[in-house]
Image (cartoon, rainbow over all chains, first blue to last red; front, side):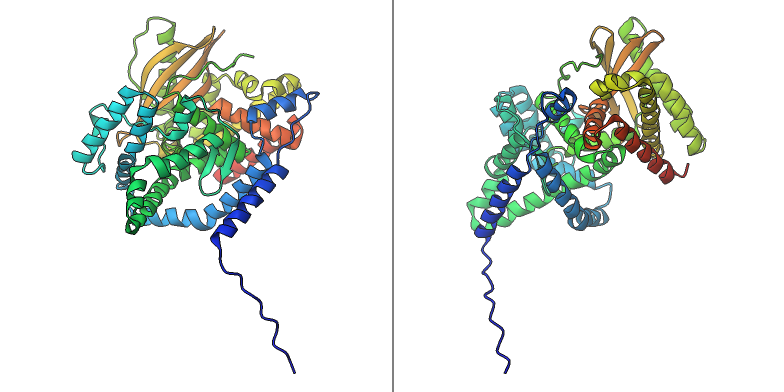
Length: 266
Length: 210
């Protein structure tokens, strides 16, 4: 007689447990995968290490590869589908619409940075674009001299003097400093009025997901081609992206002011 | 990525519009000489290369000539490689300069066909170190899009030369510097970087069938 094979107990799907395990795994991996600081006897390597300022580099590179895989099987097909459905001429308008309903985030951060003139511009744009620009699909503000800018809580933290923290690469979200990661979370869940609306009534939670989805598709649609370009022009795409990311954020934090003099004539 | 998308979009557009039509400028002092220099580069780029009715291979050759004339290649090499440049032999430095020229020529010329009438306005200049001038400009696209391009110029015995282009805050020289420093530390030597650049150029050439 063949006995029944022992019944395998199928574990119940427990998201909290999985999240906890993942968190523990990430922490363990990042501790194990810290880049080794070169010794002081090798000043060239040490200088490069300090300029890169990426102590979690081995871990980040692993996440970067995970992201590249997800990009290929998941994100790219979504963006390609989006580009089939939404004609090229309509895409900037949809992007304007998303920028417009996100402008309360910029306004709140303008105010938290005591940038009252810029807050006025953000408010003016919101009023003009929502009204005359048909809910923001048309950027009327730009045409009357109210230029777009964005602020986020990552920039606010920088202006408050919070240090950048280590560079981290998050699959699906991309490059960020630790400070920008905190800022992203604060904006998405605390500052953004759409998130309040989604939470106020349980049946409205879909609004928050639609919000995330739309913002995400816009961001990926806008960044896919330039990133492909950066990948082709660089030797080490990871390093080139890290450098570009830092420079763009530094400029945003300075509100577009010219960068401090680099030593170009060494 | 979320927060970067606008700036990245601007950079993508600017790569298609490195040559641009400039507004006329009045020659008065060193600073307006610098804006004239940027204007000439743009004018020559659009008339002789982008809008010229010639084959793409010839555009590429013309671009190489213009690039070498307007850009300070050894100066870029010194900045991009910094400490490694000083440690390298003159032969290695020369090989780097040649390869870097190829990398720029082949990556930029791939996108010349995407040019569709963007214009450039010089918005001002400022001093940039004892020998330098920073020319600030805005590139304006068809759909009212605009983004900033700063030209970092240095006064050399033969006149102004471009040392760096900064598009929406992203410096070409700084990005290459960190990219190449990473490759040198991965491969363990300057020769390793040169080999990687060599195969990159070979790939780019193959893709363009030249």
